Image (cartoon, rainbow, N blue to C red):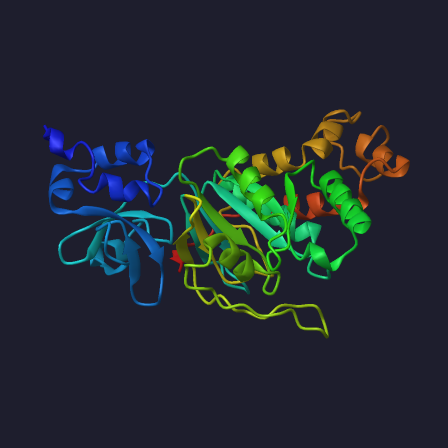
Amino acid sequence: MASDTLSAPQNLETLRIWGWSDEFTEHWRALDVATREQCQIARIVEDPRGAFMVQGISHDEGPARAEVIGQLRKGDALWPAVGDWVAIDSSQLIRKVLPRKGLLQRKAAGESEDIQALAANIDCALIVTSPNQDLSPRRIERMLLAIREANATPLLVLNKCDLIEPTELQTLLDDLRSRLNQLDITAVSALSGNGLTELMHSVRSLVPNSCPTIALLGSSGVGKSTLTNALLGEDAQPQRTSSIRSDDSKGRHTTTGRRLLRTPHQMLLIDMPGVREFQLADPESSLESRLEEEFSDIQELALRCRFTNCGHEREPGCQIRTSLEQGTLDHDRVHSWRKLLAEIQSRRVPKKSSPRNRR
């Protein structure tokens, strides 16, 4: 039987400021005694190529470099991602990845079937967009499914709101809430600081954890790095920022890797490179049920159709088609729902091999 000194990590108080909770203490207790005796727990805060940077081993020291043991490079072992809790030995080798409460991921861009891990163990995800050509409800709906599949709470942040008139902004917010099934939305200007206090209150009300981990998602140029700088405060090393190109309203990449950072508000931020293409990952997951939850308004209509196998095209008694004709249902939202459902169902086809997560 393990001794009492092994019932929790020795560096527990330091780990708490990096987001440790009682849930992970249970995962620690489930590890074998040898691992608990020989290893310390740390959290991955950055994933530069070739190694990982971790925090939590010492309260006074900065991030430490850690490499992965060979066993984790084989088989079905979890490959570490930013936000993971890991067991590290005295040689700074990662020997175990503790079970996750969720993983934010997407299918890699292009034709590859690889899955790209974005962030592990997040409590909340801020989808950051701006009121210009970047604003895409369809992309937001894709991100919402991935966030809920990661067991995290989404919050839409409409940044750069000082660029439009207040009446126009209110109309836009009303339209977005209607389109996105009354999703929580906060309007801010990260550059001027307007709305940041309200944003913090929104996060705290949605995620009452003592030290929540928050991921920032969005396209390049929407102000994620500026928002990160504003939330980190004056004493933090600033993230690089850039403006949106004037010719096509598309952003420039400024964040080149994923980093987990502490804020003065007892929150942890994971900033990451901009993502314009967001394909859903993990066809073996519960994405279809997540889709039903996210599009509950359409799902409720579908259940009231005359025929249980209604294709929602020309069938008599189709409640979705009736709502579209009456103007009470958004055509583009229905199109997005159809496309996502088809994508999820098409990816159920068994693959010859299961690809490893890409870093």
